[in-house]
Amino acid sequence: MKIAIKCLTFSLSLCSANVFATTIEPLDKDYTLQILGSGGPISDDLRASSGAVIWWKGQSKFMIDAGGATFLRFGQSGAKLEDLDFLGITHFHTDHVADVPAILKGGYFFNRTNPLYIAGPTGGSGFPSLTGYINALFNPQYGAYAYLNGLTTGDGIFPIIPIDVPYKKKKNATVVYNKDDIVISAFGIPHGNVPCLAYRFDTKKGSIVISADQNGTNSDFINFAKGADILVMPGAIHEDADEEVSAFMHAKPSTVGKIAAQINPKLLVIDHWMGMSLKKQKEVLEIIKKYYHGEVFAARDLSSYPITAIKK
Image (cartoon, rainbow, N blue to C red; front, top):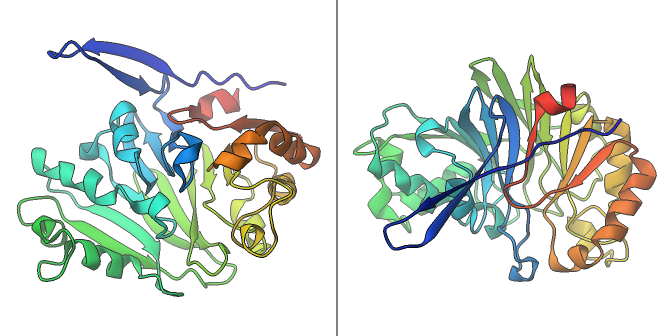
């Protein structure tokens, strides 16, 4: 049976400069995945880079990644930094973190005292740990944005609490958030040699798993994602992509389809489209559907997927 997803609602407001500002908010904010950026690291996809918001009990409570242009999409989605409790970073490629400081700076413009929890992988292969990354940005002595050092001290702005997650940890996930009836877990996935995490959201209403870039070689990811109502997987490359670099970093469509078939979510969302995979999008989706026979959606910026529609 086809799943009816009412993804978007549009509202237009006239600005003083006679320019229309557009917001694209989910119709259902009770428990909903909204993709902020569905693109990759190259501008030829004409999309924002990676980022997603999880709406919970009417608020934009959780965010995964903040790649380039997600700052704009965050605002367009109607999300509010005032409501955000947790930001999960999958890895430190620019198309997943470039807009982190831009989004966090917004905290100077409203009153907030409660901390924002930020999780990310431990360091390795030339990449920093989450704590190292935060220091490189906001340390008062040497940070690239030292003027925002209040984020680490809570002086003049809400404090952030970094959580380093061991991405090499085998089999068992790490719980990074557990309150307000929702548990968030992180699990290391193979993105070439880049430290990388997937995130899982578990509630009584259902489960959402967001996989960042991965090549699909860690079979323990299947157990991590089992029982998910929504599974998000990347569509970065096509089936004929080279093995040495592209398939070392990203799963081919056939691999994505096989993984999804084993996890068997109620809904599969494909994001992280790049220029070449977009040109072959029909073929990519057809290959995935050879293995996974459930509902598949090709994500676009600001598309949203409510758990309630899937549960019907």
